Amino acid sequence: MDFDYSQGVTGYVLVLTRLITGYWFFHAGVTKLGGFNAAGYLANAPAASPLQGFFAWAAATPWLLDLTNFMIPVGETLIGLGLIVGALVRLAAFFGGVLMVFFYLGNADWGHGLVNGDLFGLMMFAIVGTLAAGRILGLDAIIEKMEFVQQRPVLKYLLG
Image 1 (spheres, rainbow, N blue to C red):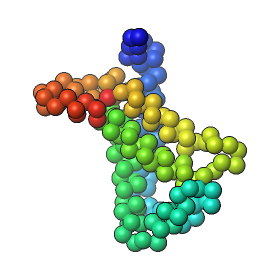
Image 2 (image 1 turned 135 degrees about the vertical axis):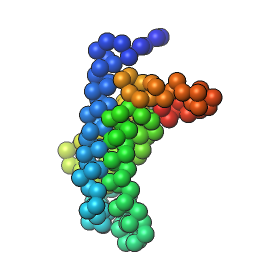
Image 3 (image 1 turned 180 degrees about the vertical axis):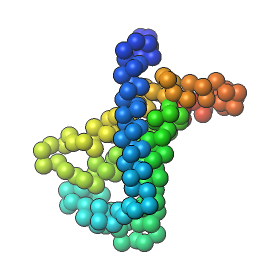
Image 4 (image 1 turned 30 degrees about the horizontal axis):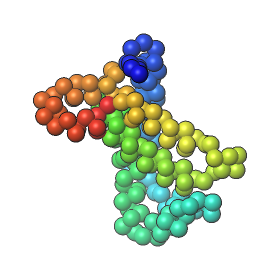
């Protein structure tokens, strides 16, 4: 079965999904730069969360809390930027998905069922990464044609 999603409406919807997801994360990261503290979030993870113990440990471990306070805003900003410009989209989507898993399990807001905004965010990263959305109106289409990438085909797994 041949599915060329880069042609027609499907390609534009995929680009729009990439741009919206990218803006969402870029904005979330930029607004946290210089003033983010995850201690409350980590220390108050709900009992329903399977990672509650890990989050409590992270909140009580100074070096890990400092790392988290740095990596969340910087990571969100870089992931969003990568999606917006369409560069290293699969890599950005992978790390965005990792963050969304932690957010999903950390919030454990399942009073109305297992489906919530964090799960939808995870799905957006899965869609963008799986369908290689950076190859459509993104820098990944240009980067993949570079000689450096052509000589190292494994790098194409980070692009898309």
